Length: 284
Image (tube, rainbow, N blue to C red; front, side, top):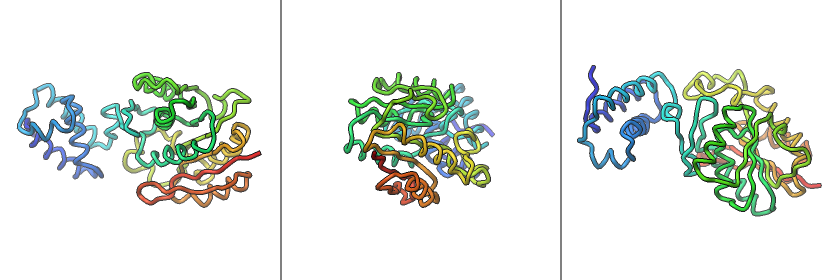
C-alpha cells in the first residue's frame, strides 16, 4: 500500500500501524519519526498538517516505520533522546535514558547541598546522569565511567555537543576507571539490576538494548553489592552513595547498604510512585 503524503494522513496511518504492532506510545512514535524525517519541530505538524512529503522523505519514513513496527526503539532509530532537557545522542551500545532515571538526578542534587566535592557516575552510558548533574552544578567536577569503549566515546561526544566542560569521562569497569585515592562527595550509579530470568527482557525496547547494561546476578543485586562495598574507599566522610534500582528491590538494597555501614539509608520514589532510588551516607 502506498503511504499517504499529507502529514495529517500519514500521522494517522502511522499511529494505526504502531498501535497494531503493540507500541505503548503510538502517537508520540508517529510524531517523532515524522519530525525526524522532515527535520522540523513538533509544532510543524500542527501548523502545516496539509503539507506533503517528497518522494525521498516518504521512502525514508517508510523504512523507519518498518523498523519501529518490528519493535526497534525510536531513540535508536533517530539516534537521539531527551533527558533532563538535554538532547543526547544514543546508540545500541548504551541503554536509552529514561524519565525514571531523572529521580536519581533529583535526589543527587538534593544531597549535593549537604557536602562540597566532586561527583562520580558509575556506568555512565550516554553520560545522561553525569551531564545532567554537571549542567546543574557548573562549579563541580563530574566524572563518568563506563566499561564500554563505545559508551565512553558517546558520552564524550555528548559533552562536546552540549558544551558541558565540567564533565570528564573514563573507560573502565566500575572503580577501575577512577584514580586510586580519589574521594567524592557523591557517587551515583544506574547499574545493571535486572535478574537474568526476568521475562521483561523479552519484551518492548529492552530486547534491543545491551544485556550487559541490564542484567546482574544474585537476583539483580550483584553489581549494586560490589559498588556499595568498594565505594566506601572512594567517598569523602559525609558523602552519599545513590543507586537507581528496580521497583521491587528497595528493601533488599536498603538492607545491603545498612549491613555495609551506610547511615540514614532511605528510598526515593519516582514520578510514577515506584521505589526507584536508594541512598546512604558514608561517615568515618
